[in-house]
Structures are given as structure tokens and as C-alpha cells.
Amino acid sequence: AREHTPTVIVVGAGMSGMTAAKTLSDAGIKNILILEATNRIGGRIRKTNFAGVPVEVGASWVEGVNGEQVNPIWTLVNKICLRTFYSDFDQVANHTYKQMGGLYEESVAHEAYDAADERSAFSQNLSISLSCQGQEDISILSSQRLQNDVPTTPLDMAVDYYTYDFEFAEPPRVTSLLNTEPLPTFTDFGEDLYLVADPRGFESVVYYLAKQFLTTNDAGDITDPRLQLNKAVTEIQHSKNGVVVKTEDGSVYEAAYVMVSVSIGVLQTNLINFEPDLPAWKLLAIYQFNMAIYTKIFLKFPCRFWPTGNGTEFFVYVHERRGYYTVWQHLENEFPGANILLVTVTDEESRRIEQQPDSETLAEIMCVLRNMFGDDIPYATDILVPRWWSNRFFKGSFSNWPIGVDQCEFDQIRAPVGRVYFTGEHTSREYNGYVHGAYLAGIESANILIKCAKKKMCHYNIKPKGA
Ligand SMILES: Cc1cc2nc3c(=O)[nH]c(=O)nc-3n(C[C@H](O)[C@H](O)[C@H](O)COP(=O)(O)OP(=O)(O)OC[C@H]3O[C@@H](n4cnc5c(N)ncnc54)[C@H](O)[C@@H]3O)c2cc1C
Image 1 (tube, protein in one colour):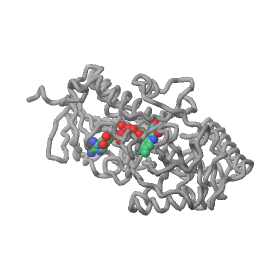
Image 2 (cartoon, protein in one colour):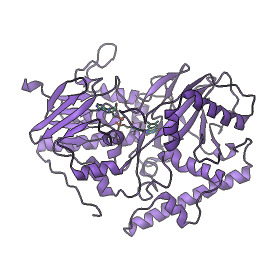
Image 3 (tube, helix red, strand yellow):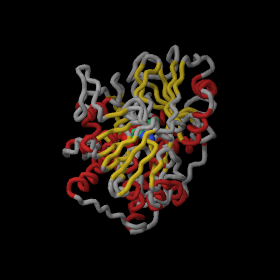
């Protein structure tokens, strides 16, 4: 019957889809249906149990805190009193290990980190002057070449990796200078990062938002029929009269509008078939953007062999192969006595590691750790390797702004196509890649739809390239 037809179908129940749904509901559009492919909400914010400890395999930091504006995620995290820990990166130069073991001499290490800071400062100034002159974008690597200061030694490459790849999950060769230096997340919200480590998980911010507009039972579980889990959308038919959405299990839903919140990695595959095809300008914009891969490998040990105390949390391993198990973190502050280490890999290393058995990865890691800490250290008893890239509902970890995509093309990624609307972290112009980007994009995209649905203002201006 017509009255059961939702006004809006939201595809995906991560931070952006859930926020978009809540924004629609707050605006009086309560006739919605959220279709989520997996068996849970939260998407790339995901807690799991590892060796008895709740670890975050997806997002874990509130990035951008203590600045002029308040990061909206920081507000949410504090509202529900999630346990957070300030991340102190200041001492990492004192904890930088050579390939074959031993720490770098302090003066040598500090020189490398200072040089990286200088390169970064130069890049920020260059970026500002290039955009003032209306110049085309260049990569961060090109900026380093302009300074005649391209990192080439293993130490300089490791520090460069720590500076850029550890944030963007792609190398400076790929990443846009104009759109990342300086980074709005840090200039707007502040330079500090706080790590969420709470038994309820970072994902409880998504649950918190969901429960404000979806009905729950006495136990607090979401029971609202407007949220449907295990519903993988495989087809979206759209016309000027409405949309028809089909899921893998054979269900068919009709609505006036659809809001697609799946990652840009998913949009780049053919998981969802649009009927008719999305227009060329839209596809080109989607295909030009990047889905990066960031892999957090957790390791459990029978005892601790790494230093603890103030400033020891982060350490760097230098290897001639750039990005080879470079950035390390101990979780003693968050989970004292749990003896858990975290090593992060990205990009090509992530792809390689996702495809090999975990036992091989662990063997590589043990060699690295023995180089750093000596042959007597115990073998890890457990390893966790998240596989975001192989997962067809994610295809990576977060978007990264590559060179050659200008603001207008970026706008096209978010632009609606008829009755099909788009949201997700990759549609946040200032904060793509982040949880707060997903949240703010959810609000913005919902507002574009609301303007059309309620005020019949459906025209969305798309500027051509170079405008
Ligand atoms: C390893 C990792 C580390 C990160 N670290 C941080 C961090 O420290 N700080 C930070 O701010 N950000 C971090 N991020 C990024 C942050 O997690 C994301 O930007 C944000 O969570 C994305 O939210 P979203 O709603 O846009 O997308 P998603 O969370 O991907 O939500 C989209 C939803 O759509 C579903 N879906 C996909 N395909 C279909 C389909 N066909 N039908 C129905 N549903 C579908 C998915 O299952 C998913 O639930 C990290 C991400 C990863 C993976």
C-alpha cells in the first residue's frame, strides 16, 4: 500500500547514513528505511574483542581537538562519556629504531624529524600561494622536489611515511598538496588527537545517534523496522517519478528518494547497479577519487618487552623498504598489562598483507620486532589483521584526495543525480576521510534532499571543471 512506501531509502548505516537518516527524521521526514548490508550499524567504526580487550579495528581517534572550533564528534564522545586518551607524538624521535636494531642517536633522529617539519611548513606556504594565484594542483612529492629535499635515506623515508602515509594512507606522490596542506581538520578543530578506548567501542556514537530517532526495546536494542540489517543493495532504479531499490536477498523497495552512503571504494565497483547508469560526469568524478587502505594489525604477547612510561606510546621502525611495518604503538595506557602492540601498514603493504596468511604476516613482524628488541623476545600468541580492502562492502579504509581532482569535481561526487542523493565521508569537502567528515556530510546531504522534498528546490548547481 502506498502509505507504507518510504519517502527516503538510506543505503548504509555507518556514521554518515545514520546521521543523514536522523537529520531527515528531525526535519519531519520520518517515513524512511535504512538498508544496511552487514549485520550491524557503525560501518568503518568498529570495535572487536581481541585477546580479551576491546580494540578498534576501524576509526579510533577523534582527530582535531583543542582548536578554535569544537569537533562535533568530540562533543558526542564526551556526551556519552567514552574513555579517551590523549595521543602524545612528541617523543617519537627518541623512539626511532634502526633496521638492524638499536635506537638512532638523538641528534640524528631529531634532525630527520625537524627536516620533515620544515618540508611540511614549506608545503603549506606553497599550497597557500599556489591557490591564491589560481595555480593547478601538484602532489606533496612535487612540493618536496621544489624544495630540493626529497626523502631518500631509510630514516628520512620512514619519517616521511610517518608524516604523510600514517595520516592519508597513501604516499606523497599521490596526495594533493592544495587539498591537504594545511589540513582543515587540524586548522579548524585543533592539532590534538584523542584515542577512544572504551568497552562500549567508538561505534557507540553511531548507536547514540540512532537511538535518538529509532525505537528501542527495554534492553536498549534497536527494534525499529525502519532499520533493516543484512540487506545488501544491488540495484537502484531511478526515474523522475521515484526509485526502486533491490537487495541481494530478492527484496524490492520503492521510495521517492534514495540516499547512498556507501564508501567511494564501493561506488567504484559494480556492487550496486544503477539503472539508468549514472551520468558520465558523475562516474568520472567517482573514479578519479581515491580509496586508501590503512591496516591496524594487533598483536598479543605473553609479556611486555617494550618501554613504557611517558612519551613511549609511539615508536618508528626504519627499513630500506618504505612503509615496511614503520609505525608502532603500545596500548599500555589504554589496557595496562594486556601486552598488546599495534602496527599500522597502508596501501601496497596492506594489499599484500591482506592476501597472505596471518601466520606469514606474524613471522615477518616477529623478525622486525627481534631486530628492534633482540632475539629473546617471546613470540606473539595472537594476531588480528583487519581486511577492509578485501571486504566488498568497504573496499578500503577511507578516501584520500589525489592530485588532479579540483573542488568542482569533488562537488560532483556529492551532487545528486535526479532522485539519487549521495553522502559519506568522501562527500565532505573539508573533512573527507574522517568520522567528523562522515557526520557533517550526513547532515549536509540530508539538507540538500530536504530542500527538494519539502520546498521543491531540487536544482543542484554543478560548476564545470576549472570554474
Ligand atoms: C582502519 C581505519 C582507521 C580509521 N581511523 C580513523 C580515525 O582514527 N579517525 C577518524 O576520524 N576516521 C578514521 N577512519 C575513517 C572513518 O572510519 C570513516 O571516515 C567513517 O567511519 C566513514 O563513515 P561513512 O558512513 O561515510 O561510511 P561507512 O562507515 O563505510 O558506512 C557505509 C555503510 O554502508 C554499508 N554498505 C556498503 N555497501 C552496501 C550495500 N550495497 N548495501 C547496503 N549497505 C552497504 C556498509 O556496510 C557500511 O555500514 C578510519 C577508517 C578505517 C577503516
